[in-house]
Length: 214
View 1 (cartoon, rainbow, N blue to C red):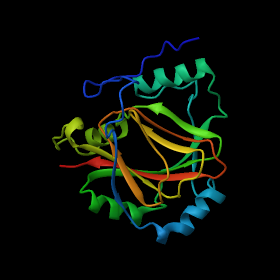
View 2: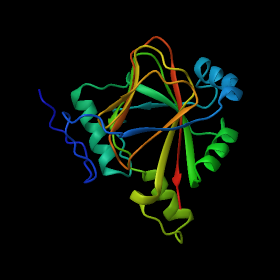
View 3: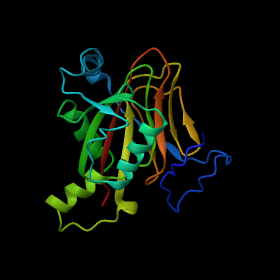
View 4: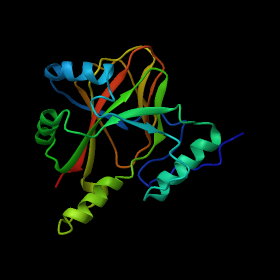
């Protein structure tokens, strides 16, 4: 049965699956991550001891988050077969604060937050567009005096903490990325659809930092 769910679209992209890739996903640099190799090893071997949170794509049907788009997407995922067995693990603590501070300086970000994502073999992060809901709530609550435009000022950068393995992929728009080295960093346009999947045999770990470039 063809899905009836419609991905939220923006005016900035064509949403034509037949169009050739056109730099929707962009490489922006390479950073040193060797100094956190031991942390990444611990993340992989004992994620929950280090504060990892299991994020189930289909959500909890008894709960509703403060974002209509996310609620609709979670409901749709349940309808098409996603279950609590489909997940990734997220770290929102201070586990890589020093690295995050360096990334903040490199990309000139303000009011940033960051996380580490672990996608075990056989798991994925399904296609979605970022809502920046945490950033907006944080700014409204703690920095209401700051003026910004989400489309023009919001940035999200992804840095790989593990080398590419067969079966792993990162996608944005009509671009697929593979054969990355750990430390390589990528960015995509505001609210553009993107995803990642691990059909390989090794864990996939990456870092995301989100903030405002003012």
